[in-house]
Each structure stands twice: as structure tokens, then as C-alpha cells.
Length: 321
Ligand code: XMP
Image (spheres, rainbow, N blue to C red):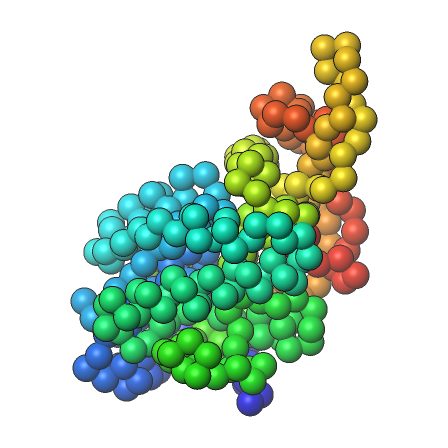
């Protein structure tokens, strides 16, 4: 089924919100739905939209899969609580690390995360809460990249011929599927979300696992989490579409305290883009890059090399996995 795009410039937010609220109410009827909030722009907007439609019949969960950014579960839950939307945090770290154990292939890693979310964690939540629907923030770019075979986005099923009801036992509602990121932000603003949520840099469903090349072990995730936190703090306020740290699999010879140190490499990426379909590297000031590099070398144990990616998308993609 071809999805009809609504371009951000043509988007009438009030009409869009009214339509989607009606659609959600119609689909869910008197039942219960769950929303899987990750704190990303898309899932935040979907949660606010579905809460407007369903009120207390929406159960919102934040899945702490162990691959989120520093303090993310607590901070996101607190922000939503302030808006009157209760969020329950589910600790599913063991399940996700168990599923990713030993996997180095990027698509297999994405698939392991997808299966853990949909077949295990969401399925259990649906059964426990007696919900019949899962609401999620799939957007048009996710659908296109999955359909084109570029990346298996964690949240795309129906458009590639997978019936979630048959595969997982529940239905999925995707109110944002006609939009791209710029349209989603407009809807988030119109819904009254705080700027810190609707204007957040994008963050992928497979989270930090999309930024660890090779096996995503708890240790390697923790290191990329520390590097991410440094990059995000240092680049906060810079006008860019997205910025991140990537942990490489290859090691390189370095030196520490006068001795050889066969250490790790971190790559910094910072992208200019409108809708993530194409992207170019931001021309960051050299002093900024030096500051980031020196902080990563000082604060992230075992890292001896820091690089800045200057490739464009395509042929690169925004995330490394
Ligand atoms: P790529 O790496 O494909 O990323 O150039 C394009 C945009 O999408 C985000 N991204 C994802 N978002 N599920 C998502 O919800 C995913 O599986 C996923 N993979 C990448 C990425 O951060 C970028 O903004």
C-alpha cells in the first residue's frame, strides 16, 4: 500500500491533529491502547496525540532496553509526567543484551532488537494490559528506507508485507506515517509539547546499538553512551540536524603513560539535513572538534583515536549500523 505524503509546507496542523484523534478513537473504540515512548521526536508526538484521543485508556511505557542515552528513561518519564501523561518504565535490559549477544552483522542486530521489542516486550505488555493496539511513531522516511532495502527500520511491518496481527498478535496504529521529521515537529509544537521534546535531535529506534559497529555488549554501549553525552553537550545549541558518536570495531595502536595502548576509535558525526533523506556533514569549527576529541580521549576509557566523518548521505547513512 502506497502511503500518501503530506509535505511539511502543506501541513495544516489543527486539521491533521483533529483527523488523527478521530482515527485513533475510531480504531481503538472502547478498548485500551499502549504507546511505546522512547523520548524521540516521533514517539513523543504520537504519545501526546494518542493521549489527547484516549486519555486514561492510553497506557504509555518507556522500555529501558539498556541501549538508551544517559538518564534518558528517567528524564523522559519526568517530562511527560509534567504534561499529565503517566509513563511506566519497564526494565528490559537483560532481554535486549541477551538478544544482541554475539551479533555483529548490522541487519541481524536490527532484527534482534525488532524481535525483542515486538515479539517479547510489547507482546507481554499488551497481554498484561489487555490492550489491543500499539501506537507507534513510524514516519515516511522509515517506510521508504526499509522498503528500498537500505536499512531494516525497527518499526516498519505492514508496508513490507508483514501483518503485525499475525506476526505478533496485535494491531499497530501509525498516525505519523504520512509525515517526515519536519512535519512531525510542526505537529509536536501544535500539540503543545515542550521545545526540548519536539525540537530534539532525532534518535533511532535501535538506539545506541545503531552506533556500535560490531557486537553491542553492555561495556561497548556504556562507552558510546559516555561519548554521546560529551558530543551532545558540546554541540548543544549548534544548528545541525543530528550529531552523534560512533564506536568502531577496529582497534588502533596508541600510547598512554609512555606505553603502547591498542585502543578504541570513536567517530564523530554531525549532519545537515532537512528530512534525513540526504545529508551533508556540518562544517564544525575546528576548536569545537578539538574540544570534543580531547574530552573523549580524557573521559572515555580505552579510546585512543577520534575522527570526524566528512562523507555525505548518500552513499553514507546517518547512523553507522
Ligand atoms: P539513516 O541511518 O537511515 O537514518 O540515514 C535516517 C534517520 O532515521 C533515524 N533512524 C531510525 N529511526 N528507527 C527509527 O525510528 C530506526 O530503526 C532508525 N534507523 C535510523 C536516524 O537517526 C536518522 O535520523
